[in-house]
Structure formats: C-alpha cells, structure tokens
Length: 387
Image: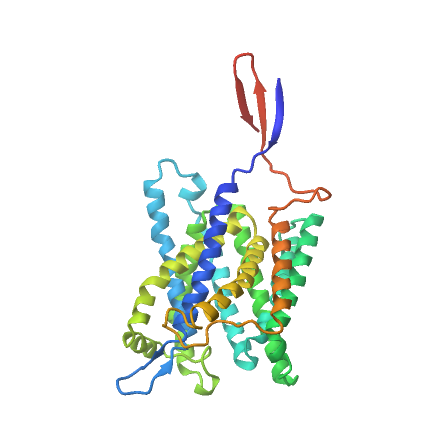
C-alpha cells in the first residue's frame, strides 16, 4: 500500500538560510556605507577636511568582494566529494551570458546617480514600488511564469504599503520641487535605472534556474566583470567629468586612495566591506536560485522598510550617531508622519508574509512542488519513496 503524504520542498532549508543572509547582508551593507560616506577625511596633507562622498569607490570594493566568489567556488569544488555535474562543469557560453547582468548593474548605478544628482533621493524612495511591477511583468512576458491569484493580491498589498511609507518619507521634499524639464529628466533616469535593475534580476534568475549553476559561481563571475568595467571604463571617464557634476558622476580614483590612507576607519572598511559584499550578493543570488527575482525584491523592500526601526534606535539610544564614528545626523526621529509610515510597514509585512507563503490563506491556491513524497506501508516496516 502506498499513500501520498505531501509535497517535498527540498530547497526549504537553503532558501531560508539565503533569506536570512540576504536580510543581514542588506542591513550591514546599508549602515556600513552610511558610516563610511559620512567620514571626514583629507586628500592631501594640510588640506581642508571633507566628507568622503565616493560612491564609486564603494562600488569597486563591492565588485572585489563579489569576485571572491571565484576563489570560494574553486575551494567548494575541491573539497566537495561528489559535486553535481552542472556545478563542476560550467559551459563557456555561461561566462559570456554573465556579462549582461554585470553591465546592467553598472548602468543602473550610472542612471541612479544622475537622477540623485538632479533632484536628490526623494523620488528614488517614492518609486520603489516600480521594481515589483517591472519584475512581475518581465517574469510573465520573458520567463512565461504564470502568477497565481495569491501572488497578485500580496504584491498589490506590498505596493500599497510601499506607497504609504514613501509618501511619509518624501512628503516634505515633494513640496519643494519645481516640475520643470530637469525634474522630468531626472524622473526618466530614475525609472530607467529601476527597469535596468529589474532586467538584471530576471536575467540572473533565468541563468540560475535554466542552467542549474551555483549562486557563488555567478557572484564571482559578475564581480570580476564589474571590477574590470569599473577599473578600465568607469573610473577613466569619471576622472575627466566636469567638477560641477558633483559626487556620483565625478570621482578621482587616486584621490580616493589618498583619502583612505588618512583614516583608520576607512582602512578598516577596505578590509571588512568586501566580505560583507560577498556574503550579501551570494545570498541575493541564492534567494533568486531557490525562489525567484520577485521574491528577492520583496525581501529587499521589506528590509528597507524595517530599517526605519534601526534608525529610530540610532536616534534615541545612540545619540543619532553610529558608535560615535559619524556626525549626529544618521538616525530618524518620530514625527507627525511616522504613524503613516508605521502602518505602511505593517502592510508591507502582511503582503510579504503572504507572498513568501509563510502565511497561507485557505481560499487561495498555491504552487505545488514537482516532487511528491509517498509512504509505502509494508507488513514489517514503513518505506518512504520520492517521485
């Protein structure tokens, strides 16, 4: 006698480990960069102190950290007794395919920096829900992935929460805008940046799922590509850009290193941050590998929302500074729009729990695993079969 006992989700443990790593990596990345980009340093001896506003330097360290994946992957294969064939033998064409998402990551950074330079970060916050719309649309059109009703409902709930939290953050900034050509150009750059980011995530999901490659391998190869793009293309261009463009579009790599050498905090950052970047990006690819790109975007939005509680803690418990290493302007205080933000975060949490199927509602149908477990009852023993 055999009896079906249910679906077998063999990726459950890995998915949750990657998810935890993604959450922690996101938080550490955000606050490490916040701490570093608020350091006061000098580029030359005797020069006036200035804020270390060098986002491309941080991006370069991130690429170096991601490139560690090449070493880690080789060690994994060396010490693995029986690695899967798809992990042990990578077709050369996959190395070429990995260039596309790596280039999109740099394109996203450029477009995003232009938008921030033109109108500041207000609309970057307000338009976060676009990522979900783009990624969901691309999965349906590009990957031919059909969404069940619970997915549409949960994503709609998340978007409502994102809009509420974004309005609470950006309300004061919206009143100061002049809706002129500069504004619409910046808005276009912001939308294109998020579209590039969504294409990148979907393409990574496609590479991981259709070729069954390990997240560490993809992290390492993309990191290596980004390192070479930054070193031999981005930094030479940033070096000759007009100074009036400001941080984000103008950066002198040699000056960056001189600034780093004048600060023990920045020196420590150079050694620590690449490992944080490797952990975070590996877990991002891991979430996309064991779930999908939209799953990661939902996680990213959720973490970005709950970081507000950390900001409140920094403001009230840490005197608005990260361990005394930053100016007194890092945290966030409670203000008249905070209740709206709190409600928005709760709505995002509800939508996230529904989308990730942590909470399942009886009137929705959910995806079933392709593997089912059957229990075979024998007179003397019970045998478990998987088909």
